Image (cartoon, rainbow, N blue to C red):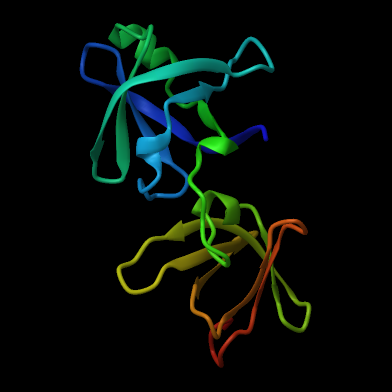
Length: 169
């Protein structure tokens, strides 16, 4: 299936080589099924593979212990790098369910074809998640509710919404 972008190493955690991973999805539901990650390699187009020895969670980040990363210096060298996973490591979803990372980067349109921008992020909320759509300096916050989100088309890379009055002002 191939590699998909999953998050970014933000910084070391402690002195023994652990790293903090900020996932794009901001949710850790499927993390327990991931056994290895691939980290952007600055000297090659091929990401470097790391087995996950252990992990824990702290706020919106995962604290990872990676096989072969044993010092703060090694962990620091990974800071700021993109993290990828095998798409096959993500669990199966029900119909009309999506991983947040699949939605990030989609082009957003209204149902009449007006371009709104790209989905830059998703705010995870208890009652309803919010799409953050940016077009230049303009930022829109769109609730991920059934009457508003009309279509998510991963193949075409787009999301279609039916805005309610005042939503786009």
